[in-house]
Length: 125
Image (cartoon, rainbow, N blue to C red; front, top):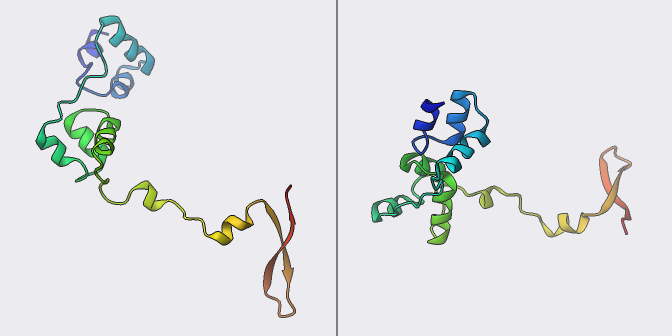
């Protein structure tokens, strides 16, 4: 629809598709049909660069009306740490003991006092 075409570049493709009952690929095809470069370059002004790392990438992207990966890539390119905890901070850190247990089958045994203990039984080859 013409109304959907007028929204190109003003709103996210996924929003346009949802509002007008279109498939996301139909919206992308309209970009190609019109010969519009979907991957516009962000004008990284000093003011915008200063915002990198001061808020989540998705929030900055929303404010400057670009995809969140654009803010992520620029921040990484400039070596700027992410705002708040990064996914690396939230990731589980494996201990040496846990790494040594990988690939081994454990069985439960009962001690004379009734508490459970785990013991190694075999290693996968």
